[in-house]
Amino acid sequence: MEMKAVVSCAGLLLLFAWLSPSQALYFHIGETEKKCFIEEIPDETMVIGRYRTQLWDKQAGSFLPSTPGLGMHVEIKDPDTNIILSRQYGSDGRFTFTSHTPGEHQICLHSNSTKLALFAGGKLRVHLEIQVGEHTNNYPEIAAKDKLSELQLRVRQLLDQVEQIQKEQNYQRYREERFRMTSESTNQRVLWWSIAQTIILIITGIWQMRHLKSFFEAKKLV
Image (cartoon, rainbow, N blue to C red; front, side, top):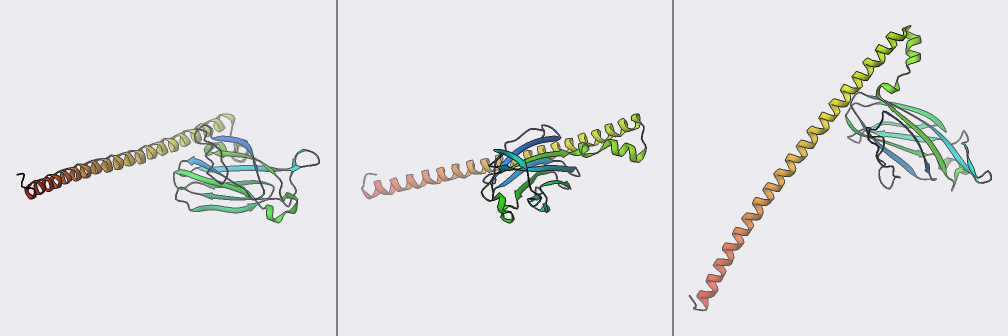
């Protein structure tokens, strides 16, 4: 997946787009700050996010594990801006959702700092990991549960990978179709604008010719 830039709530944070199905990073947020990410996800794809927080300690001069009272609010919107997840978690947490519409999903996180005086005016470091598609599966657990041999487990992994590739190919076709429709619409607007400009120029020329003719007739030059 192609990596996009990270920004704070003043803009949108674009990230994790097609460079890899699993990404890990950390970022800093202030007391009332909000961080948002955009993840391009095919339809019917599971996404798992894991995070842990560290609070800046002035005395130690470093980030230390957060207190239990500090939590994160996670909000996820689909490409149609419908909220598909909005929930309060603890200082360390895990969230899961499944996409039902292909496109850019917005993932936003912010702290419940107003409820914790210790964080007032401080700085929080958030370690975040996003897993998409077949990489959300815990294959050792699946093998133990279904009693699969090593070969059977490998076949299961390959089937899941093929399914995910098909979903991503379908999403790319969906993007290409939307791009084509946008290009056709833009070309059509440009064509009509050119026609309108031509008509305006012709009408202006005719009006100028008639105006000049009337002027010369009034001055008895014609």
